[in-house]
Length: 149
Image: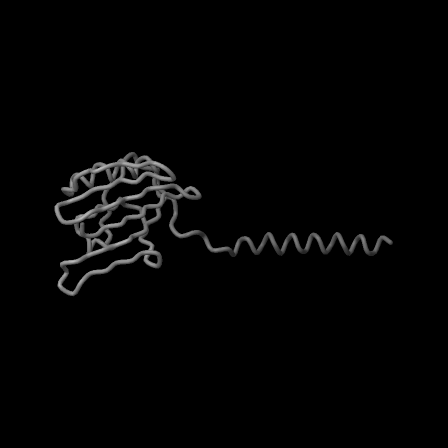
């Protein structure tokens, strides 16, 4: 009778050790939390800024190409984008960044809506930009829709 109990204990310990060691092989989530800073600065990376030169983006955010959509006509007269970014910045700092930097890029503020995130709407004479900032699993997510009026 003792033999099956000892085998069962050995089996449980073995399974526990296998599971514990396999957790060490899980890939780490994209991006690491950056060092804490007081304010966000505009990013110098060449994300979709090649298409949208007047769209500021805070540093420390990763462009999610697989979720995003960019269309530009051959002449370059029509540019449309639905862009996604993720980063480890503070939610309120990210919202404040867009509130300041969009104005600095000559966007006119239209309205703010808050529900499951904060939506900021801006416009220029020929285009509109909606910036949605929300939090998910500790990350700050940015969704931007930009295009002609």
